[in-house]
Every structure is written in C-alpha cells, then in structure tokens.
Length: 258
Image (cartoon, rainbow, N blue to C red; front, side, top):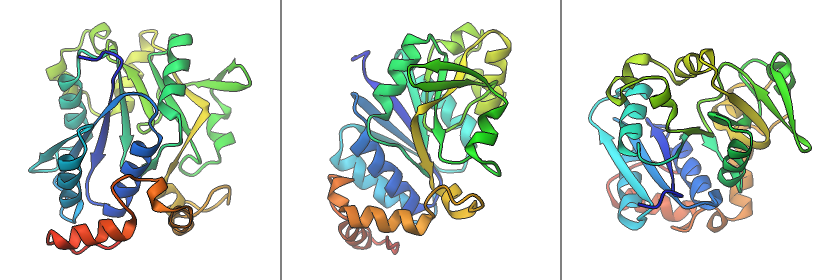
C-alpha cells in the first residue's frame, strides 16, 4: 500500500453534466498520487453509464453504485472504512471544480500548520460575499495567504486526517449515525481540533455559479461551460472531448448531451 496516495471521495446523484466536469477537473488538476472513489447515490440519469465507462479505462478510479440514495454520511462512512489505513483523505462534491495543484498545496499547509481538516475557499458562499463569510473567523497568516479558523469548513474541496475519528473515540461503523460532515467537525473543534479554510486554493461550485448571482464576482454556469469548451476539452480530460463523451453515452443507451 502506498501511504502517500490520497484517496478522494466524489459523491454523485444525477447532475450528469456537473459530474463530468468535476471528474475532468480532478483528473486534470490533482498533482499527487490519488485514488478516486466515486459513490453514486442511485442516479437516474446517464451518470452511471459514464461512471462504468471510467471504471473500465482508468485504474485510478473505483466506483460504488448504491441501489438507493443513502445520503452523504453513509457514503462517507463506507469511504473512511475502505481507506482507514491512509493518513489523509479528501472529499469533492460533483458540483465542484478543483484548480490545478489543489491537493499538494492543501496537504503542504495542513502538515506545516498541524491542521485536522483544511478546506479550499469557495468562490462565493451561499447568500454572502466571500469577505462577509470569512469576516467573523479567527485569522492566521501563512506567508502571503490566510487561514480562516471555524468550527466547521466546507464539505467539498477538503482534506482531513484519518486519525481524527480514532481521536474522537468513534468506531468507524458508527460514523454514519453522526449526521452531516459539519456536525462531525463541530464535535472535533469542541475537543480542540483545528479546522480551517485556506485562501491559497479556490474551488468553484457550479450550483453557486448558477443560482447565486448577487455580487457578480464569478462566472455563471453557462459562462463556465463556454470557457471550458473554448480552452479545449482535451486539456481537461484525457478520455476525449465533450462530443466524444456524448457519443459514448448514446452508444451505451443513454440520452444525455453535454
């Protein structure tokens, strides 16, 4: 077992186009050895066709196709049990685009600052500007960047120490009973854990780009898609361009178009 490998959990439930883009970004922009573990919560669109295809061609991807939507906590529980012997784990949602170098940078800061969890900053948090969201948090400088400490961080674009579950006295089989990831972090910080956002890495959440357009400080969803296509899809994904993915989906009985 390669202890330097970073297992990454990606949760999916429908949102086929988002899922394709999220996986493109992970495969293109993750700069450390990794294993992408994709848990699908009973998608009814063409997501599963795409995931099965990826599983066939990419040894760095492992999929779990749940027959029912079991939510986030159960999927995280199974992921943590599956990779409990690794020092660090990561989680990315299927509406999130990670930037180049995100994993190595988060891991570096996490180790140097002895953090239990670290989260990339969001382009914009729900209902608030980034400045408003970070405003009430304790700040700590890291070079020319800043760590923002909070009792919980984002649930996407995060890296966390596996041993936090042992330190909390939790059995792996009981993690799913605790509810959400933010609730687990609240327990951790109440016992002295260190959880922080880091403004040296920014992720873009597609749902926010589509639904929250008050500040105008980020591109809308359609603009993101347009920009990615203009940059050239082979830069984003090795398995082919958007047209090629669409043809593959249709050849396997699907109907989705990107």
